[in-house]
Length: 253
Image 1 (cartoon, helix red, strand yellow):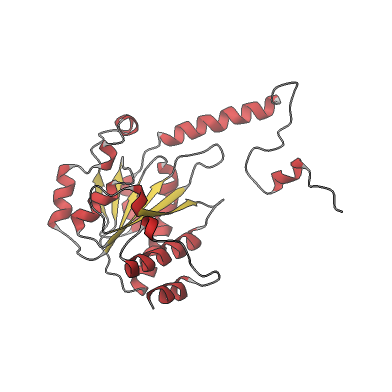
Image 2 (cartoon, one colour):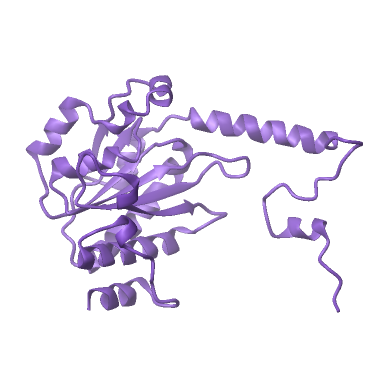
């Protein structure tokens, strides 16, 4: 029988803090200092600001910019409710130029703007290509600052969208400062709950890569269109080994 893998061997396969050793009843100094640095970087990431003009330019022409009712980062962190509501003037602008029946994409800073800044352009491009191939009408991409996931409900409602995908920065961890999640909501409107969404998370170079994340979201979008709902009523039953086009075709029959 092969001897059990030593704890130290696990460090080859994970960024998690395993097999750090000990000095008496404490961590070795190097491991302790590394933890403190990672914690400080995670705290800084929460306060990171989105460069909305640069991101909108990277996504492409027609991208629209909005903001929540949280006036600054401090307010955003202390008042989650304000991060879920659009500024009145931004809502009015979206209502004035609707995209009824479309698939909308909202790119939001969330709790870690740095990951969104780096990954959103490629992720949006992959999603848009797949949506066009699946016959979705597409709304202009919207970039939002000081935004929570539920802001997508109001954005989608204002646009008259059939569905919305919110690309948002996830809470940073000690080994992950660049993770993005996508929340899919069918028939978005104010008052939707998290039980009515599907999530694809941990999108980053060290986690779920952009092509795989886009393929998963497109499969979920096709299933949502067939079922007319997302959330607890939509289970991820994508056939293993199928590409985005094959999976979408099978779901929609």
